[in-house]
Length: 153
Image (cartoon, rainbow, N blue to C red; front, side):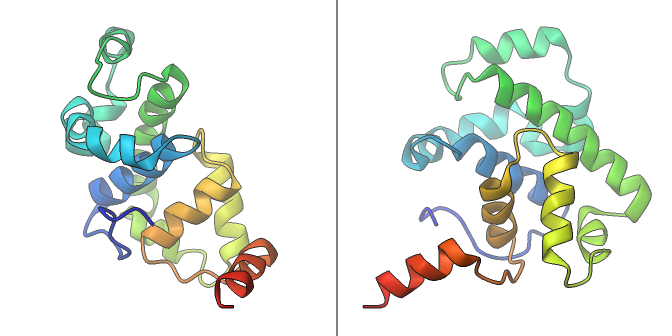
């Protein structure tokens, strides 16, 4: 986990949304580079207010694509805006993102699958990293067990 990240449940939906977005933007890139730019991301994405980001327009996307202070990946920018809308929908249905997660009980496999289907640019590894960073207790998968066994030697 990158040094600036905290492994704990965020306080509110904006915190969960920021954590998911940070994981999404870090996927496939140097987390150090993303960390250095993170204050710019917070400004560019309205402090990760799901309601405000969900209202972003094509004009906003174009502006963000010209912002050298963030990672200018159009697919990830559009995914972030889409995901904000999903957070807003989940708030209506479950009261909060935390309520949504709780609705799965301990069925982490079903939760991960739903995250991948509901949110854009969130694959298996990104979903796991996000959940782990948000303090969700995950059972290590085969690949993680293998890595853990090697690192414990």
